[in-house]
Length: 355
Image (cartoon, rainbow, N blue to C red; front, side, top):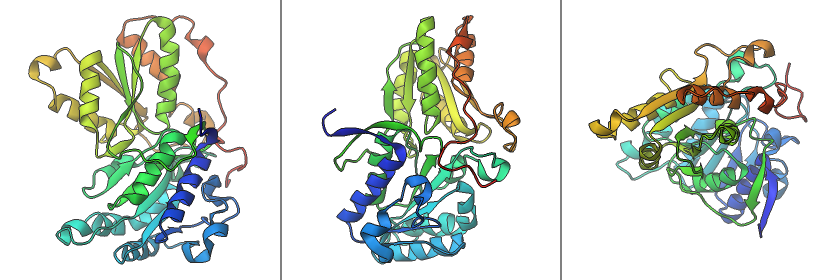
């Protein structure tokens, strides 16, 4: 563990931003709250003191204008990082993201690229319900020209964010708010992780769980529990949704023959649907008949604000265990003894929520 510290996901994001901005003076950090004392849940705390208001600044509540200005600055040599405290805020800038950022390289015949990173925070929290708790990765992953990155740990957050900032393409960087309080070992060094490469976090032989972002945490918990029932689980962290590392997925699927895709968002028309399509498109006909594919995800409805309803809306490690147990025709006796105390709908104890 030499040169590694056990730090928060938010600290890893902060460190990646500071390292990148020290390395390249053309990097800008903009967005509502980036210079606030709380620094977007701690991810941008203290950065303005280092780089001053010329490179770190707040913006009026005008997401479309902010994104357009950032795109324009990227075309003249700047490398802006935009941060939205909710993924839903970025919906006000979709024309700029989809019709400008994603298409400029194509429309200029490769002469101009848009090196911009848009950090979007997803997931439930503080009872914010239908309009502020969504995981909308599939909307952005549908668009050619965008790269979609989803870290699941402090280690991957730092490495993937540094890679995203240095990439010459527009990157949508999703951060699940429940990951912000997670700790993990992270190198002090400036390191990069490849965009478009999945990671096998745990090797197994009986079934492959494919997921990303916060649901990797739930998947690893389930894998640990299922070991008690003699089920060996392989956990594959996608890390990037576009480009998708199909070769690593297929290699794992061919090994275990059974697959559970755990979606951060709703299953209908989503990321899990695309992965299932890729699996069957890349297998030989004789292989398909031996493969079993299942998936779990959010309920196909708007997200409720009530905690009593919301706790039934999201799958967790127990949900995953039950699905896999049924797949193997195993009665997972005393599964309830592995249940942890249900956490409140408050991912960060330093913030009580807006309501």
